Image 1 (cartoon, one colour):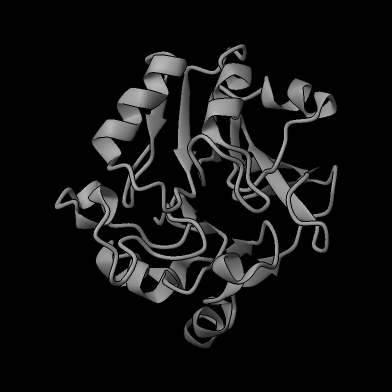
Image 2 (image 1 turned 45 degrees about the vertical axis):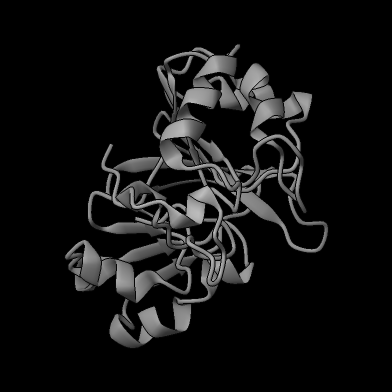
Length: 217
């Protein structure tokens, strides 16, 4: 669905190469994923717009899983609940296992905000971790279980806020056996999509990619 960090791309009034880009992959709304058309993970301020753009039948969404309560992940929850009041809102706890629509989930806490617990998810054999500030040793065994990893790509070569720079995470993720690794939650890097993907693969390998709005996996 969406792949930006806390603010949309392009940023108003900015003339950097990322914001001036005419590549549709550089037009980003706040991060969210939709699983099999029925399970939504995070519900940011752009969610209703995203439903319309991608022709999502949101009345069929029965469960919304929230990774953490920062505005860019819950800012559209009120609007969504008005449209679909029957949907269940799920706030997983650390080490919680649960199953929805035949899909197995394992929630695990990751370091991000000091004030609010942040959860990443193992979804069958897919890791979804859009917000993280470091990769402690005790998480590596979980991350290695992912055949596909979708990871925090908020910043490029300098840690920003509570996010780990891609130049630091790529060498670690490169050691994992995942078949593909996508970076989401892409922030204001000032680097357009095509160029950033090239730079990512220079440090990593051809398994590494930069996600974009509307990507289907």
